[in-house]
Image (cartoon, rainbow over all chains, first blue to last red; front, side, top):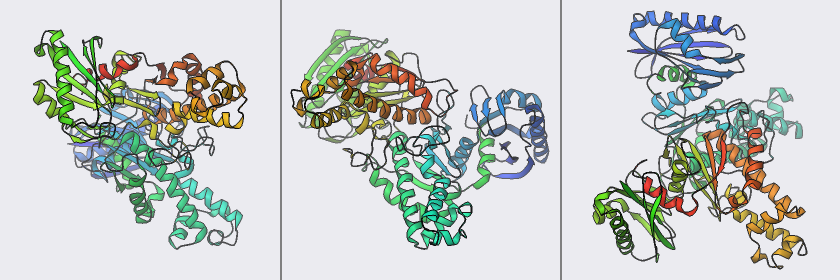
Length: 315
Length: 315
């Protein structure tokens, strides 16, 4: 049997026909054209599922369809509570898609389904408890407990980026000060890079960015740190310390088998992994206990599709 | 049927015969005399279980015996990994007590079983997901997920007091800086009270403590804050802010149905609860979602016995 998974983004709808090994056999992409009436977008989504099902020999060959959505999802009732990027609120997406498709339908938060995919078919394959950190514009991720997505009592848990690691610290988009996201996302590296450029326009960061704060990227900072530039190295060092600190809390609270690191910053590879693997075990409360592995995500952007397709298996 | 639960402390062994409503029908207490050979202490523990069983009509009337232990417990294998207060390491307590008693035997961490008791038969009765915070000398507690104690992959999760809320902050006993425990335990109030006394020996705190730093208690600081003393109020205000901040992280990560607050500081009652209930919903990431209730623990010291007795039901 096959399942169909769809990553519903603010920009694109990306769907895939997925086999029971979590491999994508065929992919389909279409612009979302967000802020249309949800019913119209859902019609498009149903068309995409049907097209992919044809490739599998028809809807009868498909065990379920799953949707990863960019917002808060009440997984039990199958309701998208809200998704700012889509402009949607209180959409009973599971019922509505089931009416269109006649298939078992599942829905989850996009970052959470990506964590599920990485845990089942990616970096964490074989593991039951994992925490995924997506170090991108924000700091997202997901928590897998006993092989399932954990979202808590009101579907707002698992917001790893919004643990407070610095009381009265940097102001977060969520309105609170000191969130992990402000210190350990790719954005945090960019902000630190801009600050360095302002302080020393003729430094390596300033030169790489052509003197323009807007041109500073996280990759630029990481690459200069790799090359040994003093300013970039200091930024990277501070970044690692904050990232480690947030991960210490996650160990002391969740004690996962594995951390899976994805998102833009994870492209730093061993330059990121090696210090994390070295430092984290020295900072957790129980240093004699077996330690969580730390791995890079392996599925890239496909994780959203694969995880959505897996919802029917692990819900 | 009855179950027997025992709170194994460094000072006392406290056991109880517990009915299926989580009520203690009979209690027994004995000094632990820690640092004796574990086998000798376990003989004492077995004697206590047998005595209590007699009151129930014999061991055949007892469905299981559970032990709450002051250390890291591998609940699946039934092994106490270590307990500093007892001087024990790698004790296969479940096997050993089963050999002595012939009953189904269970073991868990003492703070975790107290959280289980409060969730099932105390402040959280009827709830499936809860976080208990014990605001005492340290900041302990436990996490209940889907009605069971959550300890993670290596039995070292649920260490609520060791989330980092202030990177590079106050040094914790665990060797790391900035742990929640350093800011939100009763000890944190005492330390702040001593600091205030040193700064202003003639202030209300100084007078209440007779000028002696050693005499400062958390209760003293709370009572003076209640009475409106400026110095004590400032300490209490800061304490609440730190406590709230740690709880924000716990909402954003675990999203519990209820927080249960125990330990010495919880005797402040509404003076503690009212500001927490007011502020927490304004600080969490999803302020429109249903919010966790915040309640005071109701079982007091009995929670350890009751929770240990419940291990047979909820493991």
